[in-house]
Amino acid sequence: MEKILFEKLNNLNIKDTTLLLDEDINLSVDYFTKKRIEKSVIKKSGIYKENNNLIQKMNDILGGIFMKRKIAVALSAGLIFTLAGGGYAYAKTPAAYVSVDINPSVEIAVNVFDKVVSVEAYNEDGKSILKGTNLVNAKVEDAVSTIISNAISEGYIKEDGSSAIEITTATDKEKVADKLDETLKEAADETLSDNNKEAKVETENVALARRDEARKLGITPGKLNLIQKLQALDPAITVEDYKDSSVKDIQKKVKELRKDIKKDEDASINNESTSIDINGKSTNIDTNIDEVNETKNNNSSNSTKNTNNNKEENSVSQNQKDENINRNEKADDVANKSENKNNGNTEKSNNSNSQNNNKKITK
Image (cartoon, rainbow, N blue to C red; front, side, top):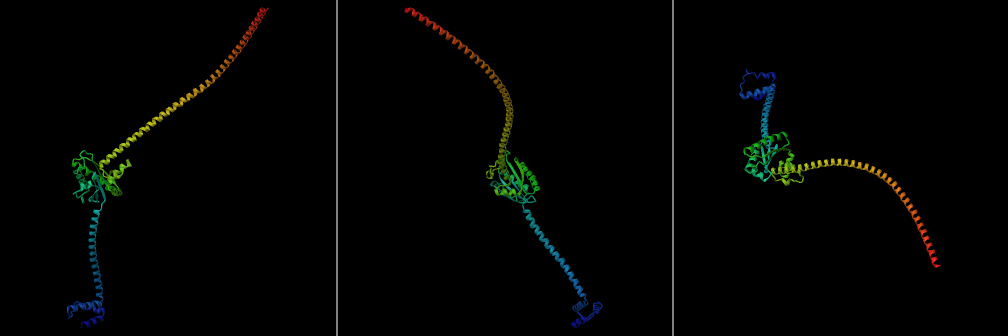
């Protein structure tokens, strides 16, 4: 019967079919049959299709909303886990490194929250002051304070106040470095004061590249800076020479070298001043010598003139003397000749007389 009914319904006009949906019509059929008939009528009239599309759209919308909620929940959960994991990694990533050198050398890795993420000793003394101490997750200023307190307990800070503490921050972020410098200097000074100790505390900033360079040499960047200050004063010094030295000893050597260099510079300046004075005196001497030479030249010229004049005068005088001598010699010659003549006449006379006497005797 139902089959026949459905066939009839399929052959009905849409308008006629919609009349069957009137609530006033009572059919002697059970509930499920009635529902099937309604469904067939709705389907036949096109209402079923529209409602079905509507329901489908509603299901799509509702399903989409639920799916979106599920996706949102899933994404939220994933984001929470991601942030948690990323936050953990971020918290464990060092943003800066702080090295503390006394002679114990210790390096602290610090995150962006100024919390310690790791600690490393660079020598045996550093291992000694870190023994039994856990500084991870501590504030960086508390960690530095603990390191200095342990160094005091181990006797690395002397009673005479001659000890030195070098705190070096390695980071490429200037603001982070400045903040850490100020915080750690205060922490160090306060710790020394609380322990009734005195020491020279110095802070310095370096780039991360300098830290990498220092690690290759097995020392902290703070100690590398100190050794390089020595090398600037004395190029013959090597890292190995002062690798295990205390900050106090290195700074002492720096002062000695600077003192020696200053002495050399002062001596050089004095030598230059002396040279300048000597040159000045030399100039004066040269000037005086020039004046003397000029005077000598003038005197020599005058002397030459006088000499020439004297020579001329002497020459004239000599000529006169020679003439006088010649005259005297001629006079002497004349006199001698005259005398010789006289002597000759006398001899002749004597000879004549002698002959006459001889003649008389003969007779």
